[in-house]
Length: 362
Image (cartoon, rainbow, N blue to C red):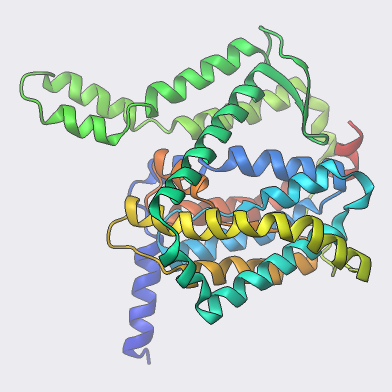
């Protein structure tokens, strides 16, 4: 027989995972893939990261964090560790990457358990947080423009030439897709609400038309179009697909790997994780979701636990991020169901996981 506490927990989980709007939540789930896909793809090609293990662990992280927080809490790769791994050649491989993630996760978990993270949260001024959010937004915007203008070699994290104007991977198509997303999502909710309160400025028909346009799942449509065009451009890639998840095994980490991982990975990653993955996320959540104020302690602990579990098995070190939260919110994500469906999609995609060795030689 269910106790009142069990009933309360189940009710909270159900409320956290319920969709506010089906297409809006699915569209919101695409909001952070612009960060996730390039980094994971680069590490898979350059460092032979276990893609299947990363997908299954990050998928589970998505589902759990969605159920716990009830908002589209993102699960992103740790960017500083990824940057070091891609730029440092053979000296920073999978053992070093995982050691850096474990050390970072352990420190964040310790800061959360001792209450020091909440103290840092209270001491950091709002202006610093806004600066972090602005820098993240500008960084993503600049990266987006770079990806549109130039062909990317993700395994080396650099551009390899100007993109052609025409073709299935041409500049014209990229600009059309970008304009489509801006047309649908660019105005923002604040402007829409402000205009709807101005009497006589719009007819009922025009308001209905704008509402229909705003409900189009633009990011989801562009993502599906991209997948379809990828298969059209290279139909032979179907033969490189293997079914079933990758074999999961514990990563062996030597003493030198622990040392290199901590010095080159953990030390530069830790300030970014504290400020952007914990402090900025908590501040932004309170702005976007009034009434859902999460403690820095809980967010720090979830980031720590994710890495203390997954990194031992070769999953990419992960964290939360203010940029990902803002992106998923902008595209329509309003509940934990948004990231939960993304997590479920990652787990299901294991049945169509690419053969990493074949992909790396193409």
